[in-house]
Length: 241
Image 1 (cartoon, rainbow, N blue to C red):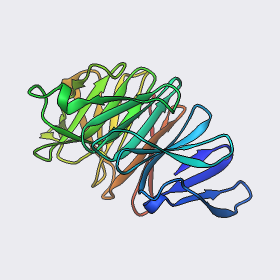
Image 2: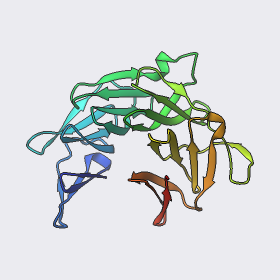
Image 3: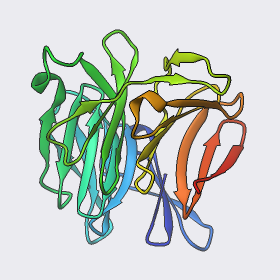
Image 4: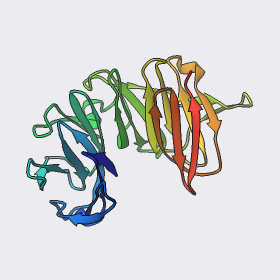
């Protein structure tokens, strides 16, 4: 789901694309593909969708969507933007990058870091102004997170933590969403079973908070307020200050 140009875009299976206009009307538009659409972003004045089989779908000046097929091994499962660039990840460990939405560079994480990091299958990416964060699972099925400044060199982040009772533990859930607080230099991960992981600059200071019994699906920030959303209409706010 994406808010763009005073309309809400909703995409999904088999290229389905719905638009909710400002007046409340919903209409179906050609999605430009028959492949499953997994993620939507607004970038460079247009809408870009990531789909299965290495396909991007880009909205042109006439409002029509067309396919852009990239030579990828995986499905594009997540896209994220910052002011001058758009990034994406696949479930085969590839990271894509563009400055215009049409020409894309491909970084094969598993090939580049073979023998150094475990094979990874990415599920989520966040492109903040001063940090790019990717999350997924390794070949053992355990969650992993890596971060980078520009997208060329990646560093793994330890996901061990201390909970609210002071007990140590290790994250076993794959993060469903990511937020990075640039001012405090800390990353937030939301997971199933109400788990919120706080990762400050000190890797020994990771904290686990249980916010509810619901699976957490999204996290965002408005000014100094963190918004967390999950199943069963769960919404929670947190003050960053």
